[in-house]
Image (cartoon, one colour):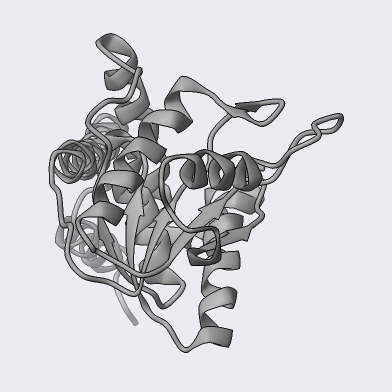
Length: 227
């Protein structure tokens, strides 16, 4: 018969062989380190995209392409806002340089508006020497929808390469969206935008945040989330 003392000794030996359970303090310390690591990675990722927003906005990739595409902005009863006019003045320069034989103006209108952003842009360009038959107008309530319309227009015309004109802080997102849609895209931001100083920085921060998420989930899903 097994002696009770032997059973007690065996149980004590088994307990001694098992590693002690981690202390709650150690578990919390590990959790904090993991959280800190995740935050650090996300911060580096965001800052990298912020740097790319800045760098792309200060890059001019002007070259011969199938079409110059100008992203829309506010218009007032057919008159482009200063921000949109700055983009359009840059389009005129690119046109005069012979960068493309086609210009695509983009943008829709708000309830009550008589003109779309695309119409106001086209009229402005014609008044400055761009032939009316070289301009194609497409709608869109935001940059993504406008670039989808550009892609669809290109499908019917067997075109592909585009030179995107917008404000500097907006350049990277428009190029990434275009690439996501299958377009060969380059950027040529305007240098005369009325958006200046600290406003530019906050626009860049906003763009970097959207790009950081859009790169992960896709810009179409980002639009569905942000509206």
